[in-house]
Image (cartoon, rainbow, N blue to C red; front, side, top):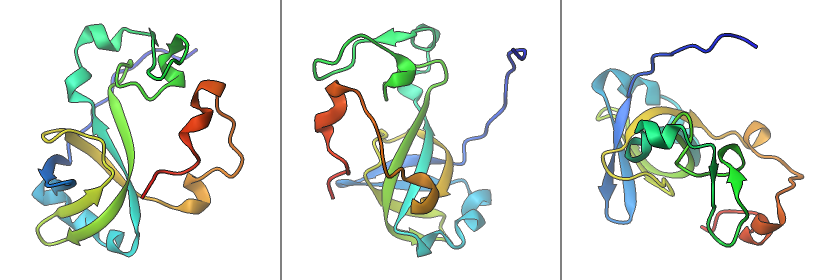
Length: 147
């Protein structure tokens, strides 16, 4: 097993609320990175779970998920309590202003003020799995996010 390391990441933007939608305001130097993203309907947003970044949350390895699920390891859940507080959302791109470095999104489950670490275009050929198995307790959640 390799030695544990530390890594440096940078915040590229911040989540802001806009009614029932969210905005990501990028740092000025990252505005040019939006070029071409407006051609996609969806993107993946990686964000820092700043509400759960304290050490005691990062040392938790098992949690009790909601909806009568059994005790589970954090790696088998989408819990914000985990060793590295990284959030991942697939969001619908509603509009974009490349010059201002702003993206308007729907479906981003991050709070206003949340640091954004990365944005990636959603490619169905590589980001979607055709045949998926989930535990019984999650089987009733459906196959798709409601629009």
